[in-house]
Every structure is written in structure tokens, then in C-alpha cells.
Image (cartoon, rainbow over all chains, first blue to last red; front, side):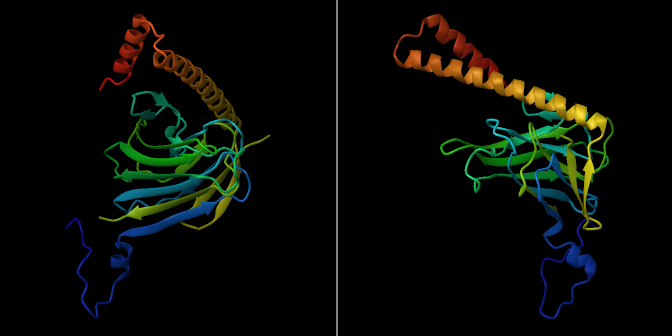
Length: 181
Length: 79
């Protein structure tokens, strides 16, 4: 049976650990930078969920205009990330982040969904909804899509967020959830 | 200035800070250079389109410019 989760509980039911671990979204990891750092990761992601939900709040440490937000899986630095236009890069472009020279309370957020992240037979494709404020009147809101095309298929066990240039500012945050079917 | 990874381990709950290897530093330098070049090209293209848009708005654009720009838009939006 693909799904052992009982969605119709009755009064007096006592949940088992297996059932509790199958409830909706399960927290996997959350971390926030205390100082400016090159990248931020959640590692040792278990393979027992159906899909991954990744939430990031990113800010660039430099004043470069419109800095890109990038993502990698499993420390793969090869040219294995394909964007919607078919171009190949060494990290996935998932949106933009706020630069350091604007108001400190502005930030950017990315919400990434990776269906079937633990498959060992299918390569991974993902969607990223990104909203970033660059300045007082400039912003970017868009949905980005991409694929991870490594030499051999692997379950995703590590997610890394990184900037195109400079570092990530202190306060940048990454949270990962597992989604159950 | 050396770069560092910030890694949260979902199994242990521990955070580690790991210095980049020489290879990682080289890759990060190359990525930054490519990103800066892309941004410069993007800024130049934006400026070119702004100028062209203003010419069209004022009715000063030539038919050849219009056709070339339309062809470019069509090509960029190929399925």
C-alpha cells in the first residue's frame, strides 16, 4: 500500500510514531547565518518523504545590482543544472536576492518544491517561486523552473543556497520540510 | 578573504563552518566573474531597449529597427 496514513482519525485514536512521521509537512532542518558566509546548507536530509519543500530568505553581502539566488544539490558543482531556456550552469538560478545597500529590513524569499526528490531512478526537476526587493522601487517576482541533470541519478540529501556574487548576509535563513503523500 | 560553508546537519542538528577548498575557491571566483559579466550584458541590453522604446514612443524608430526587434522577440519566445 503506497500510503499508510489514516486521514480520518476518530476520537480516542492513539497515533504511532510511523503515523506521526507521515503527517503533512515534517520539519527537516532550519538554520540562520550569524555572520556573512559564502553559502548556507541543510545536509543529511532523510529519504523517507515524498517531496521536498525548501524555504529561503536571502540577502546579498554586496551592493551589486540584482544579485542572482542560486541553488545546488549534494555539493554538485558540475555544469549539471538546466534552466527553462535550456542553458546549463554550475548552479540553478532560482530567483534574485536583495542587495546590501538598501534598507536593512528588506529581503528576498524563495519557495522551492522538489517533487520526488529521493528517487534513484528519475532525475530531479523543480519549481521556485521567488520574490525579491532590490531597492526602493525595484523588485522581481517570478517563478523559475529548472532541472538537475547529474551523471547518475541520486536522491537529494543536501540543499545549498548561494549567491551569484559576493556572500550571503548574516540573517539569511534556510528551512527544509519533507512533504508526505 | 577565504570563503566558508555554513552547513546544518538534519540528523544531528549541529551546524558546522567549513573553509572552502582551493578548488571550491577557484569555482566560486569563476562563477562570480560569469555572474558579473552577465549582469553587465543585461544592463547594456536594458539600456539599448530603453533607448529603442523611447525612439518608438516618439515615432522616430525606423521600420528596419521595428522589424529587427520584433524578430528578436519572436525568436526569444520560441517554445
